[in-house]
Image (cartoon, rainbow, N blue to C red):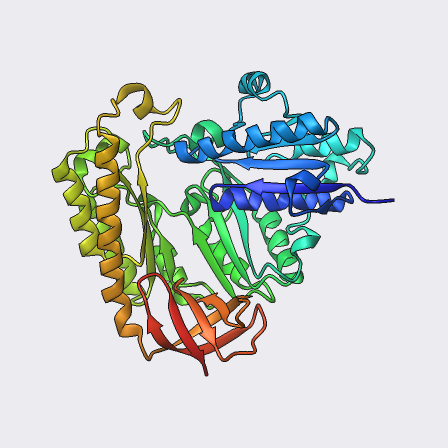
Length: 437
């Protein structure tokens, strides 16, 4: 008998990627096999993101294509998952009316509707509710290919920045039990994963909402001690919740990568206050100084929003100046777009013209390229350690340094998962080329 097939389409953040892998794991444990094209699948799983309008527009376009497939094949099962669905069941009704091609609606990080669908069709065996285990941490189709895995540890967020839709779509903050996380880390290691990235909207708050639970520093130490795991990272951090204990833990624990992802979002104190970020630009700089004092070679990435309501040209220049002073290793730059339900969408006029938002985005991107060109130039000739993640068609190995710089390595026979040392032969702003030693 030919096994049923599925096709997975996902966009968005690393949390979305982790949710998608767990949904794929559940399907494959029930006998489904993946196919690369939606037209060849019996079940389509679409994992969605609505953090930016551009991402939401992409899913609407995809659903138009899926609707055409469903008209040609009425037996096709369509499952919609993620932030477009959200946590509020009352919102599903509007989606059902707008997209009648969808059969299943899965809230973010919630596989229960998919499991119930499989049980109703006799595809999966029922589980003891009290002893129910999470699905395998990686689908069989990923075994041997995924060296780096994302492991969610904090679901949802309760901080409610004025521009952010996450609390309304993923719900309030909820830390997973550490025992469950550590068991999943061990399972990932048993399937060949060498690097684990712990995920949370504010990952530094891990355990603070759960009485008697360990906190992030101890969780990092325990995950890093998992046999077979070579590297551990964590993201995303919030400047208010990075403690000196966390910084010292990263500095002192073997296997914890010297890398911090700390979004700042703006360089103007007035805009930061309007965003309800809870810190000033000076406090952010002081935090980065503490990180670099403890870990001089630490990698740092950040996020910036340009064109937030009310942002003047002078305030944008404050953001540009802050980035010159901080000199991060990467900036993810986004143009502000109002998101439904958020405070800024309801109360702040979107008064920066789109052309000006784009001008600011391009200007900051150009500054970033110039900064990284200068910052990476001294790496030429230096020796670095790379965890091999993939092998390019050319035979080049691709991986990252502990501080998260992407490197392409020539002259190596290393397999994915191997650690290798290489000398940098070319240093560009966004990647490096090296020769294996």
